[in-house]
Structure formats: C-alpha cells, structure tokens
Length: 182
Image 1 (tube, rainbow, N blue to C red):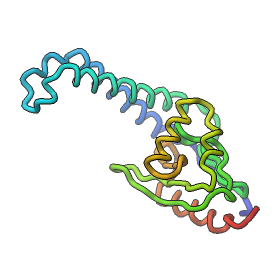
Image 2 (image 1 turned 30 degrees about the horizontal axis):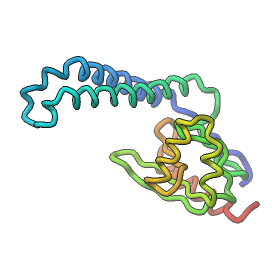
Image 3 (image 1 turned 180 degrees about the vertical axis):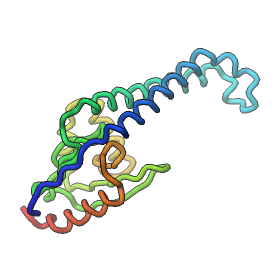
Image 4 (image 1 turned 90 degrees about the vertical axis):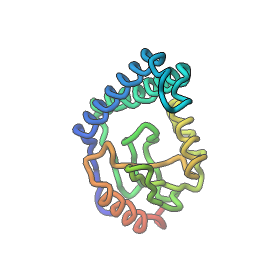
C-alpha cells in the first residue's frame, strides 16, 4: 500500500443513532412506569409486571449506553477507520481496540444480523486484542463477540462516512495485498 486511507465518522449517522437511543430510553421508562397496565394483555408473559419492568430496565440500560457512546463519538476527533501498511486502525464502534495488524489477520468474513452487515476480523491471537481493551466492559463485549462469532473483532459502517459494500471491498483488497507483508 502506498498511502494511508482515512474514513471519517459520520456525524449524521451518529445523530440518528443518538435520536433512536433517546426514543428507546423513553420507551423503556414508559414500560417500567406502566407495567401494571399490561394485566389484560393477550400474551400471558406480558401480563407479568416484573417482566415488563425488566424489559424496560434492559432497554434503558442498553439504549442509554448506545446513546452515551454515540454522544462521545460525536465529539471524537479521531478518524473512524485508518487503513495503511500496518493494518486497520479501528475507532468506529464500542469494541474498537485501535490497530489490528495485517500479520495477525487470518481471515475476513461478512455477516449480517437483522439489517446490519459487519466484517468479522479473524486473528491468530484473539487474546492479544482482548487485552488491548481499555475497560472491563469493552473486554466483556469482545469476549461476547468471541463466543458468538469466533473473533472479538468486528467492523461495521454504521458510524462511518462510507458505504458498507465499498468498505468490504476495500478491506478485502488491502488484506490480500498486505497479508504476507511484515
């Protein structure tokens, strides 16, 4: 590779994500506060106020965390993704750990969960990257990815100013050119 490719974070996508998170936190609060009003629901499980309150609390926690992450990213001056001769420097999502070296990457796969496509970056030593996590929560998130997908590392274009199809093609091309270097 001759030059460094920098892909910026998308402020528009971050605003949309924050807005969605706020709406789901409000929904979670509503569920928690109105759990007793579901007594007549036709689905038996939803008649239990503790289940409704639990769903509300989980919604508040999960979407509150994604909203906080999006808000922090909104003011982040770092580039979302850098691709150069060293590897891929990821700063695009909650489980990003910085530089993923080409020499460590064994394979790159595309997966889809619901409507979100993402790249799984398989590495020879996953523990090296889990060890780079700056917080216990990030390490737990990475271990969860490891259990589900077999790798702690994933990249999506959800917060990037870049189309996923183009990102997928770019990373595959650069991987092929750099996998035997270094």
